[in-house]
Structures are given as C-alpha cells and as structure tokens.
Length: 352
Image (tube, rainbow, N blue to C red; front, side, top):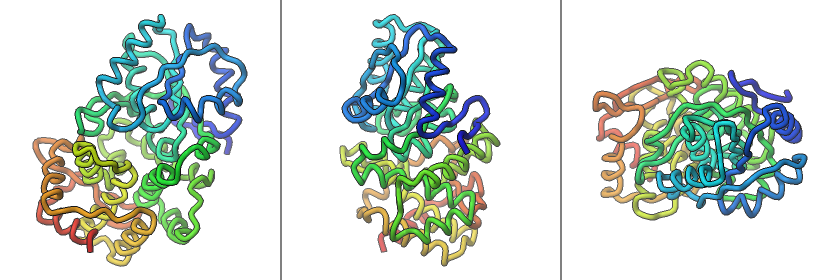
C-alpha cells in the first residue's frame, strides 16, 4: 500500500511522499511556500526535510512549542508573519511538526485570506496517527482544548517515521494512546495484537501506524463533521481533555497521550457500569495503560475541578455532558449522559 486515500486528499508514506510533494508544488506553482515549524522541529526536523526533497524556495514561520502556545496570540503572530512576507491566496503552508504545529497551522491556513492551501508533515506519533488526519484545525481558548477551529482538509499528508527518531521517549509514547484508542473503537484483532505486544511495543512500527491511520480515515469518511460515527474518535477524550486542561491551567506538565490514557481507563470503567462492557476487557485495558503510562495521583478536590471542566466539551449540547462509551471492543455508543457520582467512581477505579 503506497498511499491511503482520504476523500479530497491522499496520505503518503516515506520517500514517495516527498516525490508527490515536489510534483504537487511544481504543478500548483504556488506564489509563496511557508514552512511552519516550532523551535524544536526547526532544530531537529527541518534539516531532515530539506535533505529529502528537491530544492524549493521557502520561508520559515516559527511558533513556540507546546500546548500552552496553541492560542490566539500565536495565531495572530503567524497571520502577521504571512501578511508581512507577502503571503497571498496562492500561498502554501507546510506544517512540519507535531499536533500543535499541525492544528494551529491548519487553522491559520483555513482563515488567512479566507483560506489558503496547507500540507501536513507530522513529526510525532500522535500527529501521524491522529492530529494530521481528518481535516480538523484549531486552537485552545485559555486552558480549554480546541474550542476554536474549522474543518479544512490539507492538500496531502506525508508520514515519514524517520522524524520519530528526533523524539524523546515520553513524547513517542504519548502518541500510543491514540493508536490504542483506535483499536478499542474499531478492530478486535488490532486490539488483541497490541495487547499481545505490550512487553515489546515498537512505537515506530510503520505497519501499526498505517493500520491506525486507516481506522481514522475510514471513520472520518463516514462522518466528516462529527455528527455521529466520528464521535467515536473521542472515546477517552471527554475526561482526557478535561484532565489535560486542568494540568495546563495549573502550569503542570501532562502530555496529551498521558491524559487520554487516563481518560480511556475512566471511560472503559463507565462503559462497564452503564453498558456492561466486559469486566475482563476493562481490567486488560487498565493493566495495559498503566504498563505504558505512569500512574497519576489525583486529590478529590482536583477530581471535582476536572468534572466542572466537562461542561466545555465540544460534544455537549443543550447543557448535557455527553460521553462516548463502549458496548464491546469495536462497538462504540454515542451521546450517553453520565452522572458525576459514576465519574468519581471511575477515578477511584483508576487510582486503586
């Protein structure tokens, strides 16, 4: 499989992607090419990219790294950079970085001059299997995740696992939470494969990355604007995002995947209580997550603050907090209300 078709664009892998990118640039004859990076990818990834692609004329636009900088101030900075460097409606942005670079760069592209072209070149496992796929762009509103954004497809996505060599172990492992989530909402065989490999997981394995990408692509094609099926991709994210926002608000470091890993365990527990999700699979999920990610301790006061943050979740409507839960592996259920008492119980289960 050389490429994966995703409706209006294709996802390419390894060296083929650079060939397709170069040909695309030549065919489109862009007026300006901007490579959007953060400080980390400017140092570690740009030189890899430039070695891989034939000579192109480009300018870099560099934003500060980290979720705490995925905000309107950074967006205005990037809009100004484009404007001051004569960006126009025939310009192209290449997002070379992780989820923050891709989400924010895509949002900037979708809004500058009412929309210019962009291409995603994810450099983290998290962005390869999740953030770069599906056409969601966005920024945070204060500490609240992805409150402002658009649906806007890239021209293409290029995935090269070589960039994973630039990550520290914690960043690499962070992306695994999304891979594992994909197995839970879609394919029992993929779930069983990941569980069987838990003592020797290769986080850079291209076949695993491709399987994860195919799962997300398939779901997005069914429901691009998240009216039903795409909501399944939020399994573990209702509480996971609230946990991430809580830590962000208190200037404590918790990676996205670490928060989502906790959210997966909590949502699996709630699934067991409401939908009779099998108890043996719940225990397997908890064991697997805690084998990959370190346990995080929560005080009762922190849990109460996290529950209050749930009101800001994007899946909510009419003031109701809606969860995605599992009837079984590969059988997600949508828009299920959960009482606070049960959420507290789920934290106790995680902490026990």
